[in-house]
Amino acid sequence: MSGFNSPAGHSPTGPASPGPAPVDPARQAERKAEQESLGSLMSQVSGDLSTLIRQETALAKAELSETAKKSGKGAGMFGGAGIAGHFVLLFLSIALWAALGATAIGTAWSAVIVAAIWAIIAAVLAVLGKKNLEQAQGAPHTTETLKEIPDALTPTKETR
Image 1 (cartoon, rainbow, N blue to C red):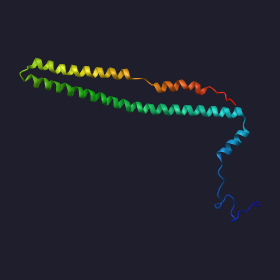
Image 2 (cartoon, rainbow, N blue to C red):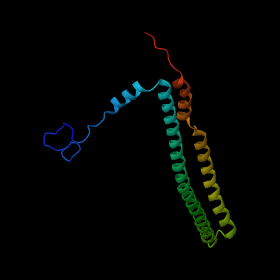
Image 3 (cartoon, one colour):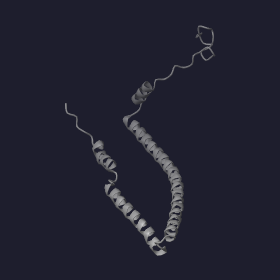
Image 4 (cartoon, helix red, strand yellow):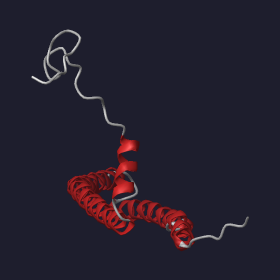
């Protein structure tokens, strides 16, 4: 053995040794910056940034794919519910027509009355739908943010 003895008489790598001191990441980065050239460091930063962007893009694709699958299933179910709802309205309309037809109004006029009710409902929905579409603004916040990107990438001059 060398001339080194620990206070408890154990070797430095034995069970009584607390192990190596934790390395400070900031100090480790300083050492690396002192030992490597600026070009090498910039190359590493560029490579790391490229890897990060590829990984984030892959993650976004995976998330969007999963979201699209679930959204597609949900939209299909809503479509089925819409068709079922259409049949409900159809048969309720036929029942109303038959009920009104059994009165003194007669079958022909009861059909006109049911059709007029549906025409009024369709007109109200069309007016409300048009009003909502006119209020749609697209993506104003995204447009504003995208306009700011070139300014963020342009270096500014500091005045002293």
